[in-house]
Image (cartoon, rainbow, N blue to C red):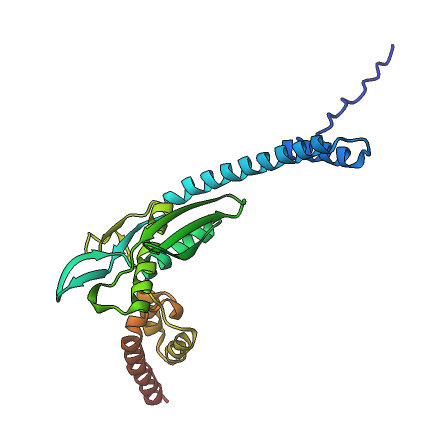
Length: 253
């Protein structure tokens, strides 16, 4: 009887895909190391490499922007334009827009900066939206100085700058705003207590009964989640609860 020797199947070698970036860099490296390489050819290779990098960065920018759009809420219009004591219209303040948008931009790898310049017509405000891949987009708005309401020169510049920042940011990020009472759909940034205030709350909470601590967690979550507007109220409630818990403990001793 003959014995057939079966050889184990040869494993296929897994080869990592080589990117265009790697290919072009290898070509550039070889060309740079070759003393006979034409300088013009090397410059053309470098220019091609830069174009490829720019194309890839723009593609990443566009993909991140598309993903970010679904995360951006409408911003609450909490600012008011008042003329002669009468409110003419509402608007979303730059501070409110920034508070809502900044963490969302950071999550998706974006940052925004502004360039303000004096021009003959007043001010030029340029917003520059940058992505971590390297691509950036910008838009510019020209504004006259806002001298309404008897503003002095410094106030006029500040008002126009804030106005310009709001509008170029809205244009770059495709922001929408809603009235603050618009069925709760508008995002309103909530200022929370400071670290010191959170520690004050925690110190009182530790003295309260387990039932009171559970009720607090149900209402606020953690001490750091308490809004600044509720700080005094919470402090008063916890003080009473802590005093009651201490009195109950004394009665049972």
